[in-house]
Length: 191
Image (tube, rainbow, N blue to C red; front, side, top):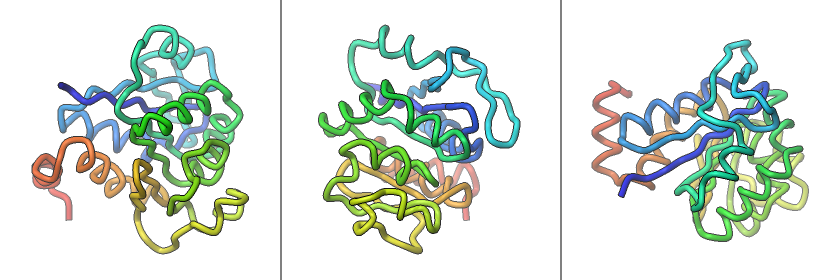
């Protein structure tokens, strides 16, 4: 069965952190749905003023999809991360996915600002953009520094745009296996 992933795109999302996983996961044969979050429009402008047309809005996604996807990805970027952190519907979906053991993935400021408002970081190691860990409140003590990503149980976190490729590849490894990860690595001429 084809794996399914949703990627939140809130106004001000970090384009590299959102679209690198979208591209690589689609290459791996994963069904990826981009979901406009914290906005009623499918046209979402990123932090670097690149506008992306999301596949659907979060409201449409929640009302039309009967089952949870295999993974959710929350990119960073400002003010995108803050916008997701204020979206109750997004936080509820993340909590449901975490409770079901689905993969919860966040990068840059999103682990500290978004996942800290859910139960996803409870008892787990995690990482984020440098010096943002203090924003995670009680979860700050489980923060790991100076690594490109942390995979703890069903949660994958990463540091920023420069680690987006490794972040995406770890998601592929978890969803599709080591062989598919290596196929994508070779096909995209990664270092």
